[in-house]
Image (spheres, rainbow, N blue to C red):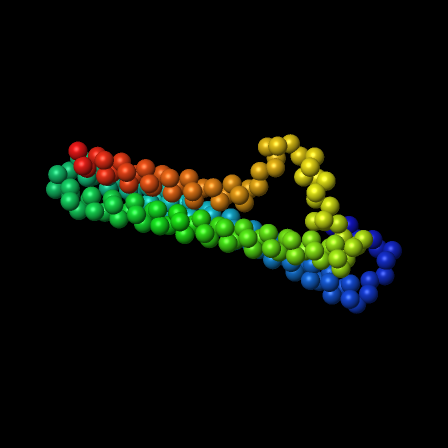
Amino acid sequence: MTINRAQQLSDDKLIWLEEWKLAIENAQRESEWFWNRFNILLGFNLALIATTTYFFSIHHNDVTWNECSLLIVYFLESFGLLVCIMWFFLMARFHAWHGYWLSYAKKIEQKKLSGLIYLISDTKNYFQRRKFYEKFSSDVIGMLFPLFFSCIWIVFIALTFLLNSM
């Protein structure tokens, strides 16, 4: 944070500075929540895939579990797909709020604290100098995982249907 200490801060600027700090803290909190929920749902999906694979192998190896295990497999696959859809919307919501708080802090920097703080409003030059592979947002990549796992669940459902219709 770059603050020009030569300037005397008015009460109005101090209030806007506190508002800016609150916006930055909220953006950090949203980012933490994003990755906490991401990790929880990633682990949950991996556990569901392992459980589905286990019941699928029971279905093909044990004749007595045939009907019951097939229903369990279909239930787990459908549940996994539903969890992925909810996961995507949850991540999109966290991403939107994170962006909102950062843009709010940038607006305060530019309009109310101009010349005092340049933390967010000066990032344009930094991002333009980065290489193409450095420009990928980790939040956006984090939002691609639910879509990837949704595709996995759709493939699982299709394979289960195809293998049991033969």
